Length: 297
Image (cartoon, rainbow, N blue to C red; front, top):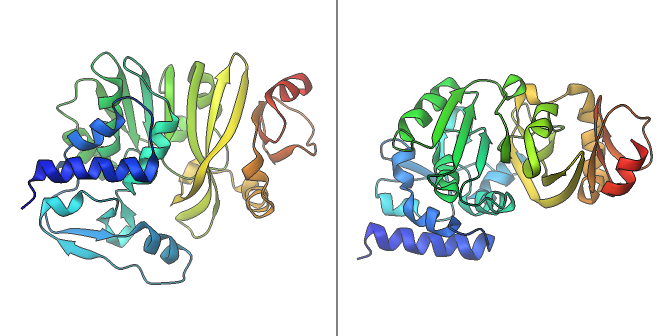
């Protein structure tokens, strides 16, 4: 019979084939961090990400398998945290791909917005190491309290309960936004160090709580911000991090394919142009290359 350690090692290899990460220490972190510690007591309710996506689209009814053996948690599956609110722990393979896009290294400082119960925050903490640090933020006070307790053994992690729209994380090498938004908040762009990376899902609303769109990586270089697609995404929406006025533009951008062609984030007031995909007040998701966007700002 496989031991729990065997299952964790196998799990890391499953993540390897699902996400093909290159960040040093990331696969080791998935093998090391005890997933069951973050999910509450058994029984656990396990579902597939594919069924979850079909359920979000209204095509099927979401279903779960109940398990009480912690070894069953070490697969590339979602685990329900609150079935009544449709909150789950996320698909590890997808989260690994997004975390990998942050290109974190030992000593970096990271901000995890939407940290839930802290499982992936712990993964981030393992990657940046003792000389690095992670700030977690969770709007759901119950989940934030659980994250604080779950991460108590990590001296390089601090967890806050609050709304991401008004939170200042301080200077960051990496920012991971784990909820659907219509645009990057100005403070996220401001707090990125030079060459800092922001990974965030730009989504259109599919229901009051869920959206789908594109996980996007933004890199700061001086006063310019390049952008590129990481992957498609279906994810819980970010509430106050969404601008209702931009919802029609976001839906159009996704349906037209414009979100797939993002090259930069433009800041400052300017007239909407043919390269503007989502044009907001003070920030614009653009198809213009960084040099062209900077020249026309």
